Amino acid sequence: CEPGRCASPRPTLSRGSTGHCVGLAQQKLSVKGQNPGPIDCIFGPLTEAAVIAFQRAAGLTATGIIDQKTWAALEAGAPVIPDNKEQCLRAGGVWDEATQTCKLNGGKPPTPVLLYAGIGVAALLAGVAGYHLVRGKG
Image 1 (cartoon, rainbow, N blue to C red):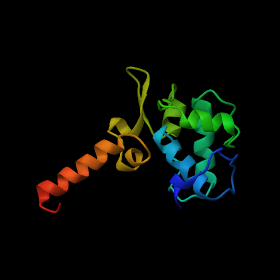
Image 2 (tube, helix red, strand yellow):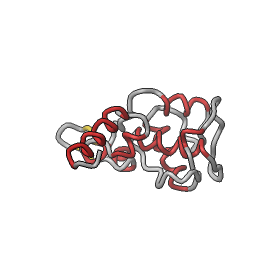
Image 3 (cartoon, helix red, strand yellow):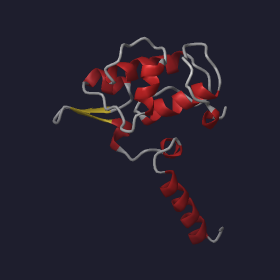
Image 4 (cartoon, one colour):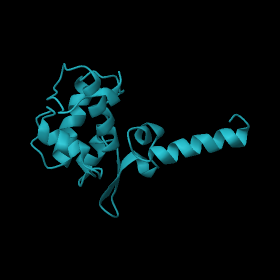
């Protein structure tokens, strides 16, 4: 499974699809605050549920199928933040009753998997290199 090998134009994906583009979609869903399960390049029930939740949060028709409109939304820069408690919880977030806002990833910084998916890769690599220099391994 090598998500970076997904070719353009992006194919339409649905439950049962497999391959690099499924892995890329799973990574992008994670970056957008959804939980597609493991990045395994298999479009199963967890990926389908994450696609539906993402589509609803993005204002798209919730089909569970990754078409060109869904790809465009997945590849847009900013994460989609769910705007109601149900979508927030479904996306794995924490709903703040006081502010009526969703905090994805429990309000914590992105995990290295999210960083690897294209957010702050240079900072991640610099941090790893710095860690090895400090530890005497680089």
